[in-house]
Image (cartoon, rainbow, N blue to C red; front, side, top):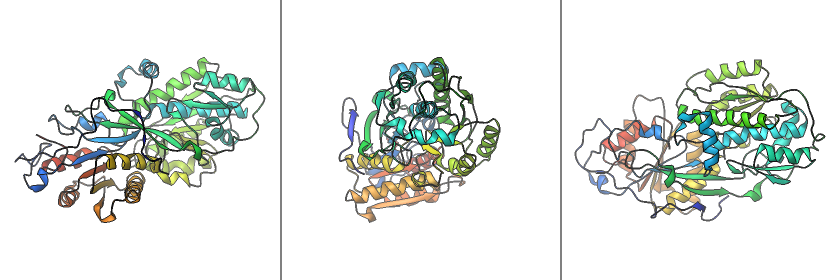
Length: 446
């Protein structure tokens, strides 16, 4: 649902969001410099990305300053506290300033652990019915330790985590969520200090069933084992480090607080790879053989769709910190699939509001052909039309992310000549944007 104008948690410092002026001139057609020189290059064009490409790794593919300057985009993101990021850096000092899905991963591990303690069991089919209830109703708490105190006193915790008030709906996903609006600077990097934050969705849509009666306070049992299925390799590998560090941080802090069911929680790590490999299936097989009770991951919706049946069929919880495809909302998951990442229906709302705010009367969408790309683009288009944008003023181009080149797609977008262009992709986004820059209609400007 639409929440009206998206609520701003932090205003962008200094000025309103800027429209981008596409570069003209007669640059080389083979690099990331501006080129072209036709009428389209005289027009202001706004460029947008989403969580699959709005990160510094995209900027690393561009040598010329300003190649991405002003490109904006949405990603599920809360304004993380300095204390939390410092704790993350103590686990992985090389994270720098990139923390995408860090809060969501941390919260996934904490929610699983609290649900197991409430259930008095490490068996996924027993503790899964408690997961939604951990996120609403009851007494507010913001850490595993404070929530555990509530459980041990015979109460019900309402965990508000690093990714914000979770408030899960019946489908086991956030009913509302915080999104960061990120922007590339002149040096083709994103400065977190310039992020702004908006809320999409409505906590009123959260579930009301808090789950079965809890086990006796202080219940003990067999050790809880959590596996990870996170991108160490592949086209979302840039998301891996903050997710992996967050899972480890959560395990460390849970165990420092006494663990779950009277035992330390054990972590089994694994690589998800991407949709072009079979790494995820191999990792899931290995994790199941080690006796995991829950698997945190995958980051890619497409990858999750390849393994979800295997995981839930084994009676194990799958809990993704980054899946956004709305397919999971109604998927037959046996009540064992959850996510702290908001569905694309919410990100599409935040992105549509951003496009409207910038005054785009025509919009071009370049979306990769998978569950993530087509799902988000379909939801975005539906929101734009609901907001009053005529359907013929929106041009959606779905592309094969494994294609040798994107010349045809770039030419189609150049011919359409929209006010705003949205690129919904992963690491292939850089080649698409380089092509648009070469045509003089990309985000690069002189």
